[in-house]
Structures are given as C-alpha cells and as structure tokens.
Image 1 (cartoon, rainbow, N blue to C red):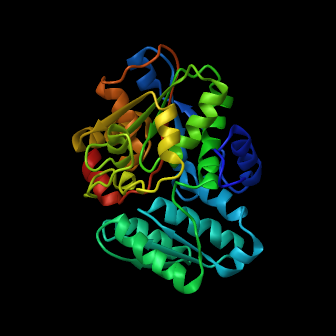
Image 2 (image 1 turned 90 degrees about the vertical axis):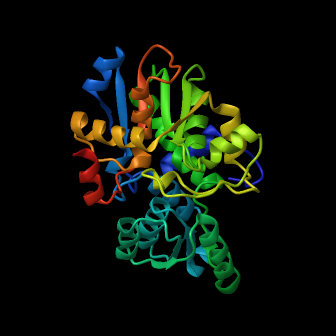
Length: 323
C-alpha cells in the first residue's frame, strides 16, 4: 500500500487476509428489542468481543504486520485515548515488538492499567491527546521508534474497514450503518467498504457534543482544533490533526449524516444495551444505539447495522450508570 494514494477496497480485502486468525471475526447480533421498536431488523456489530475489548485491534494488527523488519526491530510508539494503545500493545506483544504508549491524564485508569498489563511502556503526559502526541514525537526523534497513528494512516484505515466487509457478508441488504465517529479511522474504513459494495446504504457518524473534532471540522470545511474535555464517550476524544492526510477527506466524501449526543443520551444508550441486550459497552461504543433511540436520524427503510465499538469502561462507573 502506497502512502500517496487513497485507501481502496482492495487494501481492505488485503487487510482482512493479513489479520485473519489474529483478530476476532465479531458477530452481527440481532437486537430483538430494537428491531421491534423500529420495525426493521437492527443488528449490533459487537467489536466488544475483540480480545482487547475494542475494534482498534484490527487496524493496529494490520499496521504492525505491515512493518519492515527494521521497524519491528526498533520498536513502535502510539498515542492513545486508551483503545488504540491497547490494540497496539496487544499486537506488539504477540509479534515480539517493543512498544511504548503515550496518553493524557484524561484517559481512565482502567484503560491505562490494561495497557501496562500487556507489557507496554506507558507514559502519561498533559491534559490532552495533543500534549501526549507532542511528547511522543520528541521520543521518536530521540529513539527512532515507529509511530503507529491511531487513525490517519492507510494500514490502520484498511484494518478498521474489515468491519465493513463483515457487515456486508452478514447483512448484504443493509440500509443504514451507524458508526462512532472520532478521528475517522473507523468511519473511513467502514465507509470505503460499504460504499464500494453497497453505495445506496446510508452511513451515519455519531459523536458526543463535547469536543467532537471530526464533526466540528466537517462543519468548518477543514480540520480544526477543539478543546478536549471529559465525557462518558472518552474514547471519542482528541483532535483529528490539522495536517490530516486521509480520514477527513474520506469522511467528508462518504458520510451521509452526523449526530451529536448529550451525556444523558450516551448514558441512556449504555443502559439500553445492558438492560435489553445484556451488552456492556463504553460510552463511545454505545453512541450508535443512542443515536437510533433518539429518533433524530433520517434513516433509509430497511435493515440497520450499529457498530458497538468497545467495552473498556470502569465497571464501578458503568454500574452506577445502568442502575
């Protein structure tokens, strides 16, 4: 894959072959309660069932498997709000590659601890993803580690796009696909796969109303900075990079609708998934369900797939929310 050309359906199919056997092919499970409520089949793409509890393992695994032997020998570095770092650390451990993960103070302890348990070096810096990234770049200059971008790089986008292939295999007549939207790696990959094979499907990106960088950038017509604040959807935090090379343009071209959720709506989505479908999801992973039950979407008639992107949530906080 060349860095100076767009990510294609072929790249995503190549990624699917590359990561097969190392990443879980997650189920697209029918939600009887949501299907009855909306009069069409609603299925949940449960990336919560990845070994790391989130979709990020796909892109991280594809990226690390694509490294040169020289890069593998030097080691890798990631900047993360939690799930990407865990995916990179897991893949690095499996491949015997040295790994460092930089995060801000806003990342929940449950995610930090999970990364440490995978043997990665963890460095906490500043109050934002940008602060952590700046420190990571200093480390790259010093030690020559290979940077694994959390979203804006072709191999990561292609790896996340394998979710779109699986959705179409399991639901070839899908009419709507609801995807959490942050830096855009997940959305861009899925959108390329879905729109290449089923262009009439409606693709909807959902985020929180507190610092949704991609949605604010789409509104501005270019990448813009946003203030990063605490949210139940912490995994959707962080900027998209003012020099964004891939995900902004792909998202702008392929997205059909966006929606921002309040903290109350995110909490309600977490409760809905747990009470009606017995699924534990973190706030950022549950936003697709929140968007659907909000009644504020313009949906095509027909089957709907919702990507439930992760379950890495502090269980004490989760139990407070669902009870």
